[in-house]
Length: 331
Image (cartoon, rainbow, N blue to C red; front, side, top):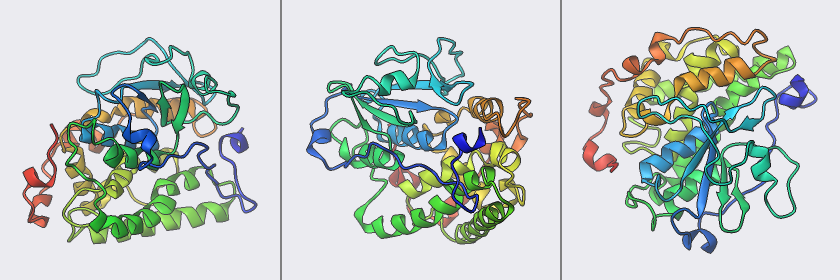
């Protein structure tokens, strides 16, 4: 079962399969989009899907790009259930609002020619063409950031300015393999050597980033970028899930003073907290990843991951000379 859930290389290291549907945000097919012609599919436990929810919210694309939120099934698939319980202003799972399917696999199979591959989130669906537009998270957040400005309520917000592109690429090249994917490499390592390599890479990178954030408000300086969003969705799950379930036990995130303040800084940006459903995240990891938690018992939430704790003052404004109202404005 583990080999099916987490394919490995010859040394026992976890290898993440490549996304099958890629997108170019500068393509004319996206610049001509109308409100509602694209539909986003996500699952709340998934950090890759979480990226897209945050950028969608910050850009003000909620009306232009509707969303359907799937729940993790017992077999590791994604399914839609009519059991949504309101949770304040936080996002909750529910039905398929675009195609009325029961599972995400059924949605993928609606495309011309069908589909028998992995049915993953996030997935961007082209409503008019009845086709998978993209299922690569970074392509989707790039598209949301700059490819749909004609539909966005915050078109002037640029999370990937050309002046910072080189820095963003640099941080992504470090964060993705060692942190975003690094926690999964720890969890699904099938040899001691593979685990040791992954966990050492993870914590040496967290040490380095924590040191960097001592004097820099965000990864690329004074403004929030896509690189920060990508790091945030892993950090917000760290003490909640990865530290315990994924064997990332060397240190908790709360033990990194700069990283935890940075986490709180981003969490407190308008609309970000509403994309973080901690109960759904814990249920998804602890109750459905059977090989890692056979009993399906969900532990109590760490107090440092609760909304009240993440809403404490972070005091990182002192690292920025850019006024917060100029830095990011979300309507």
